[in-house]
Length: 640
Ligand code: OTU
Image 1 (cartoon, rainbow, N blue to C red):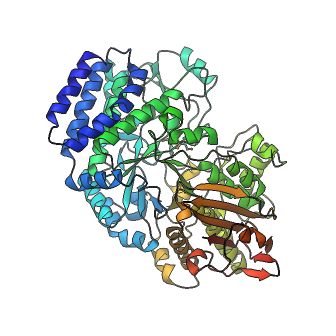
Image 2: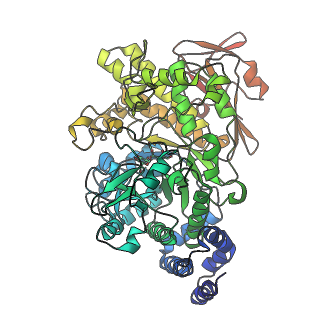
Image 3: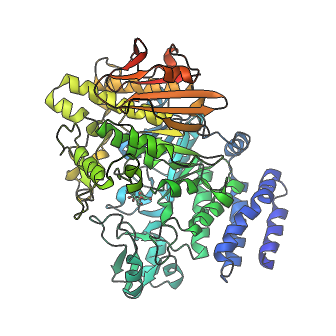
């Protein structure tokens, strides 16, 4: 350790004599914090002072922490799986589209309670640049709430209300980039060299061209290229996403410590879980795709350690839409085990759910999920059916080869099918970022529209409508059973269709992800209590699933899951175990009756006659001799 760091450490200790809990955490996690930072910045002359300043900020932040939050710190330290338990069910919404403002969200808590939600992810709510701002993912001030939504005090009050109701709050931290209107970027534009060094800028195309040789484009249509020419600077600026989202340069230790302070501040406002946006991109290396570089994991471990020492109640959720092998590393692999994120989005499951629904076949999902690495200790998946982003058909050649299919054709089928361009398709979605040469595309659309509810309502086809409802519930049933924290995307609980007016907004027109970000329809939500409506069918179906999850320990994120062959390739099967308890899930992926031999249930020592809590489908299973008969899209949970 550099002498000045050692001195600083001693000083921090001396000042914190009154807080033994902080001191023991500092002792315990100090090397987990220091080692990755030394690995990244050890030879940088700026590092010593930065590290000393960081320790001070942590001590200050811990000292200022509200007594209620300290109580949470303690509770969660003695309950390390607080986030991973079967009781956790999440809900995701844009605060404005859900309830206007943060105060409005507080007024809507009874709705979330009725649904059984215990975790609320509010989409980006920090002060963003004026539109276009990528739905808030272009932050101009991490220290302020978006004015139209409220203030930091409103956020604090919301967190307090949520805690009072047993709901934890998840907020986005956009780590990879700031808006070009952020004070750092503005200072850089004004000629401040120190702030310019927060970003990755280049005098000419030499380096950008070298990087782009191996860089994939994230938004080839709406934001081509990964660099943007900034006239005022006379330089190219790295901008992976939109040209107004400037990538931060994490090889600069000041950037790390600045973002660590953002994390500390949000923790003290009462945020329980930080959704780390676009983490794979934090470190760049020529000759690579500039994602998932080993340094990203050093950064995450260090950031996690900062929070663990100063605000241990805070959980980390990685947003990394990458291959299974890479994805699992965000949950802490090898020497980072137990030191990175608690949660990561399982985008593989999400894509496979929709793939299986379109094909009506289980083998691909069974194979891919079966060969996915298990989650490391202390961490778990976030499972979801839809979110605010597009669906990327991340299905590889290897995946399809194993089940005798062709990856390109399958992906093309999926993008056609969900755009409603395939014979027999029930979907009303749209292509997002179509690749001109292959014809493949990602997919936009709400769950209800993709699952056939929109088309059925337009056609006034009651039979098709019931099938659409069943499809939405089926996908949620598999996501809820898979293990991990299931998230309900706002509106899916009442079947909100694509926003018909999304193109009216001048800044959204170019980005059709806005079609599946409709505003909450509270009049429709009222119908959740009106039997016979779409809203009531979905609402009650999801409530049954929430209840089933809470009663089924095997859905704990730390359990082990294994997809299995059911003897009928139209019926998906999954077996989960946790703490000696088992859950067998069987799910009919088709609109026809399907038969499965009942021995599959006996085999695991499970009983066919379980109480209603484990019958989240709501329909009774029929037995025909030795066979279980699954009605269209029927699923069953057998637990013991
Ligand atoms: C995230 O998504 C957000 O979810 C998007 O809404 C933002 O536009 C974006 O970051 C920029 O802030 O490319 O298609 O591997 O795939 O971070 C979605 C992670 C995205 C990226 C993911 C990104």
